[in-house]
Length: 227
Image 1 (tube, rainbow, N blue to C red):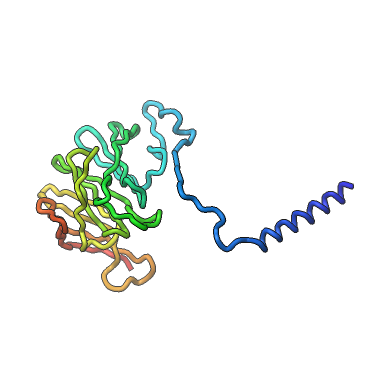
Image 2 (cartoon, rainbow, N blue to C red):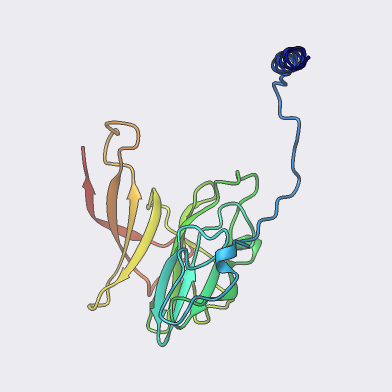
């Protein structure tokens, strides 16, 4: 009796699998109009012990963190891709506990992400601080490329973007030298035709931070690439 039941269940399961394979739809049968994520991992339920920290240091959807020290505090920004408002910013005094300050990109005129895919938009922002001014440089991959916004208060508001049309690529960063010069470095295509898929170069430009305009001029000074 038991053998008959097992034989019947096996045949039934095989039939169901066959039907499921034959009737497999070519288009998704479920579509989502809204998705909400919260970092409620159990490891973050309690604050870390004194002298300890957690990895990652911030729970939730906060990729590509960039941190700068300004006076007696630290400030962190992360990628936001096609979500708005963009580029969340946090403050900490110990690099362990972080207080949300809001967002860098809070106005539609600061960022164009209309029709951008969820993995497009704002890539890998970098935050810097120099002589009382905060700088955030990033890439809007489908909405104008690389740009810089500034503020004297990291909680905002931040300025309208200053685009760098000559700077082609992603992952930009800024460096303020002791002699007053400012440099932008980034990952971009190599000179000439790429030799293979993914062939990239590291570019460096001098940036005039004092005389920035709506379309800031930069001067190429270096490029390093690998075959």
